[in-house]
Length: 431
Length: 119
Image (cartoon, rainbow over all chains, first blue to last red; front, side, top):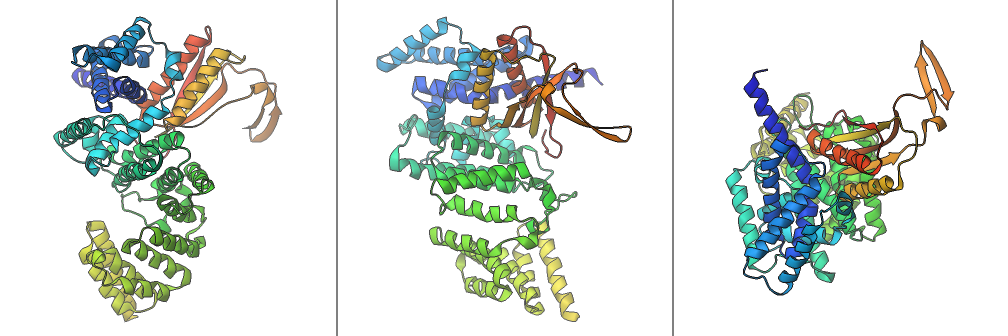
């Protein structure tokens, strides 16, 4: 190998090795600093400085035996410097500074690092990052940065955006939190469940962003699914009494279990009913089913995420597409429509009813949606209608519906698929 | 990416209480962080059995056996971003052994599951 190439590779590998250690240690660093400084955005800034210090020193010295202790000592030193520099070296901050100085005298050991229970602080961190006063985009970026330890560059790559856009989003979001006095707070009681929905919304958004990424795109995009699963598991361990937390985790685990079966070798998407179920990840399905059972045991059977997880579970439990319990799925969609009415839920219910009771029953629901303004340019409405008409032998109408759907489809692959179906309907007409 | 860590050692004795406690805490932290999916320690090889095919013959042998050099003592399954993260995690785990069970020697094998893409 060319020597300069190998040197570049080594530097890149060292960089990645440091980032890997960093991601393991980052939650404990940021939560410890937040507890001392009572300011999550500030804690995040200072832990980033510890990362920069590691990136500066470790390539020369190698990763220390106890990298967590090194990072913690460095981060705390930065925090102490900050407090010393600051104008607010009084009251509780003075006490914090004194405590920290005393702590600096004794070298932190690995065992102490493992002892910290950071559950409460982690919850605070998650709630701060997903604060409803921030835009959705800002919440997403902050969550990936503060909870998952992704760098600005990694977040930018995952969302196909320029680094500067993400950097600016993060800076602005942190400023908003600091200026509105929301830098360090944990909601309690009623507010908690209200705020929880904002957190779960962010997690599900991250998951879906990764889930819709096509094969062959930058691997960081599908990786977003795993980041969302991680946050979901963290939430399940620190908020174990919240059924919707388990519901969302179940929904994500069950959807992610189909990853290997979702595309063919050429990267073309394979519809769920046509997938090779042997490729579904049974370990992940079992974990999802366990989470779903827990959500039910906590009395959350009619929650927004629990109901959706229930639908996916019906698919996961069916050994073949033909064994799918469509009647049960239709029931879940009806329950979902009752708590969160939406024409898209209704369209999904039409599909399930069409499978359970026959195409005519499904078509009646779809026809009721045809004048729905929210679905006016939604390609799946004529697509579903075309499918039901085809099953009823009304090929001419089916063809027109598929052509209308193709005209509305956003991406080429779907457009082509719909045109093929229009041709198939036309072909059936001639026979 | 999904990884399995397989810990092998020629030491047949149990871990020291200190090591056991530290491993327990580490596992707890990793589960709470959403990284570790499963883990477990295995009973001594002597209490196990081997079902083997050799020379076209299937044989079942109960322990104890003529001891192998390194025996699997435990495993853990992780869901991690990449191999670098797996190595960082395995190093931390093995450092505990170095610190809390002096004289112990062994290997933590880090293996990616087939069929899980990533860097």
